[in-house]
Image 1 (tube, rainbow, N blue to C red):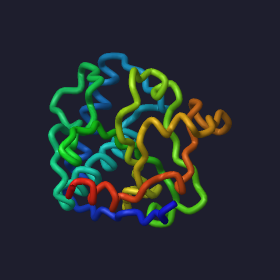
Image 2 (cartoon, rainbow, N blue to C red; image 1 turned 120 degrees about the vertical axis):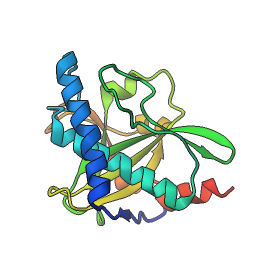
Image 3 (cartoon, rainbow, N blue to C red; image 1 turned 45 degrees about the horizontal axis):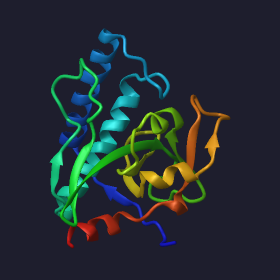
Length: 189
């Protein structure tokens, strides 16, 4: 396995305010519509962390010159949209990319930890031909890094953890992820 080298994404006021705008709209629209989160409280902070991870991936794609054909950033979140992920182009083919953001102590040194993918969300999919990028954010939301990625078909090979989680989730060791550098290299082919 290749050693994971997380990619730190610098955050500035625009980065955070753009993510916060989307997170606020998701939280407000979700509560108005009565949507229930599968991932805990589904409140503003959790949505903000998720959007920070998505913006980190978006900035990474821009820097790596990975063509982004669709983003999960929209103006109206009052309806659910099952196609609310990135679509990027790699090697002449379109790939759906989900970004999962997890709070960890040090996103730049995610050693000996597991990252989680909700079991119900995974099993609700019709197919597993997509990429999952894991982002890590520290507890103070001042440091974000893209840790690595995995093809979704490989997620089901990992153990499901049920203890100490709000919902059962596949536990993916960081060592099972591919480095972000490989994703950037695939865009050059």
